Length: 295
Image (cartoon, rainbow, N blue to C red; front, side):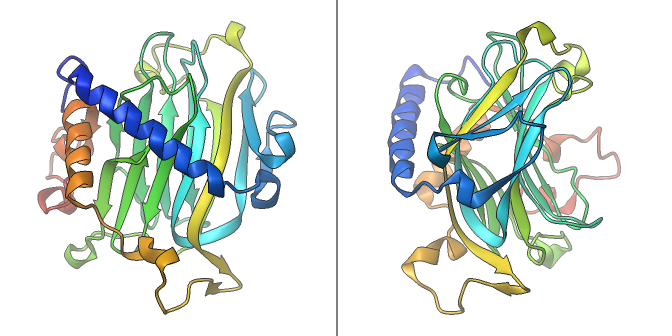
C-alpha cells in the first residue's frame, strides 16, 4: 500500500494538472445533450437538467439523494463524463458513477467518490463486478481538488481490458483473465448510472464521521458526456464486425507513456489494493492478483 502524499514532486503534479486541463478542453467539442441521453430515475426533483441539456446536477438532503441513468445500454465502450464533486464538508456522502447490467448475476464497473471533511482529500473507490462477484476494490487519492472545477472521468471497456482514467491519466487496469478462470464482464449490456446518496455508515473513515446535515443540500455537477460505444438494442449491437477509426477503442491498450502514468499514480496515490490484502483473503489472493493483472 503506497503513501499518497509527501513523496510526490511538485513538478510532476504540475505537469499532470496541465495535462488534465488539455484533456478536459478536448472533451468539450463532442459533448452530448443530457435531455437526449439520460433519464432522471429518482430524487423527487433533486436531480435537474439545466442549460438546455448541457448541465446536470444531483443533490442530497436529509430526506433523499438523487440519480440518473443513460437511455442507452452499452456492450463495450469508451465513456467520458466531466464531474465536479460536492465541495466543502462532504463527509458521509458518496457520488457514484458506474456501468451496471440487470439481474442477480450482474456486471458492474464502478467509480465511487467518498466524501470527507473540509480540507481532507476525497477517496476514489473503484471496483469491477462480473456475474455478481465483486470484491476487487482499489482506492486512490487524487492529485488535485475535484470540487473546484470539472474533471473528466473515463471508463474504457473493451473485450481485452477495463481502464479507469482521470483527466486522461489511467489509474487502474483490469485485464481479461478468463484464461485462468477469472470472470470478465463481456456478455451483459450495461447502462451508465450515477447517484448522490448518504452512506455515512461506511463512507468516511469507516463510518466514524457522519454527514453534517447543516451543510445540506450537497450538490454534484455533470457536463460533457461522451460515449464512443457499442449501443445495445433489441438483442443486437450497433458495432459492425468491420473496424473503423471511430472504434479504435475496441482494441485500445496502454502504450508506454500511459503505463508510466499508471505506475506513477499507483505508486504515489493508491491507498488500498485488494491484491495486497492478505488479511482479507487468508486462503490466498484471487488468481488475477498472482498473475500479471495485479492492477
